Image (cartoon, rainbow, N blue to C red; front, side):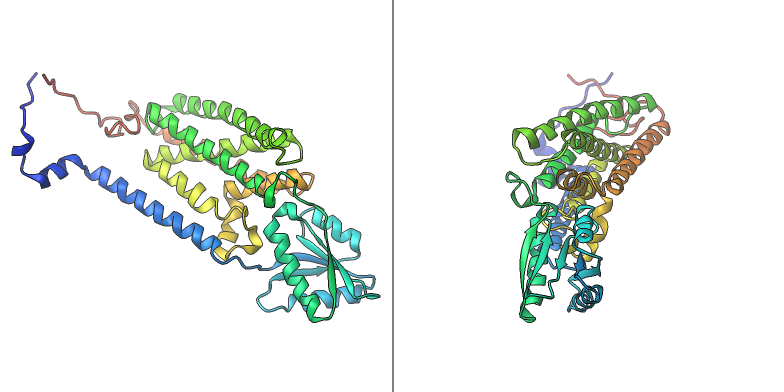
Length: 367
């Protein structure tokens, strides 16, 4: 064993050498990665929210005479910028059923015998969306010398301001998912040493997900009275959201080590949250965010939570399949990465040591 010589910082080559010794290349690259993630965050959120604009909002049109409904739908479809996507339906009952099934976001019921028509909206799907429908249809009616009477057929709960509680609940579940996975990495290395350890991590994540789903649902309602609907359904949804996001994070960690945590944040927070349809539902988002939102966990979770709370669970199959797909894919990649590794696990995240299985050098004795 040899004794490491004592080096006087003042004789180590000056301040530049001190910087090189204090800031490793790996640390510098991680800081640059954080900067890129921060800029992506700003770009994504500002890009999604700076100019909400209605685009092809699905709306039903009904009238006592089918030709009247078809003619009105044609006029609404020809509006500049295509803010609405109207379709003529048989009657008001059909229009109401389509709203409840989440096939459309509003319905205009024409009364040819008078000058006042009825507009059905559903603020439970998002207050900004129902307001956009009211504004667009109201302006069109005004130009024709008519007025509309607005009826909210799926109003948000009194404790659910602007219908945002479902979004914030899902965001909380997502945060829990990737933080739980990150903590597992901090405690025992970003990449699991073998398949058994990967299974243990996934099992721990599953237990956490079940608890987090239940507690989040209880807090939202009945504790705060923010969301109506089945607490059992919300519990199941919450457990799936947490596990899906956690599994994605574990998968990214298996592929990229500690950098995987940043990749999970990029997917779920930077891209997922602004495209989730929370503050501005999909028809009000720019094309990029509107396209990716339904396929990411925050968007799928928010849509499903609103369906449970205000639409009797209708149209929930698609979002559940999306979440299940992420959960299965994340678990499979996590197990595959563990199966492909040999030797010991890398150092725990934050230790400052390399993560590779053979990267831990022998330490010299220091007195």
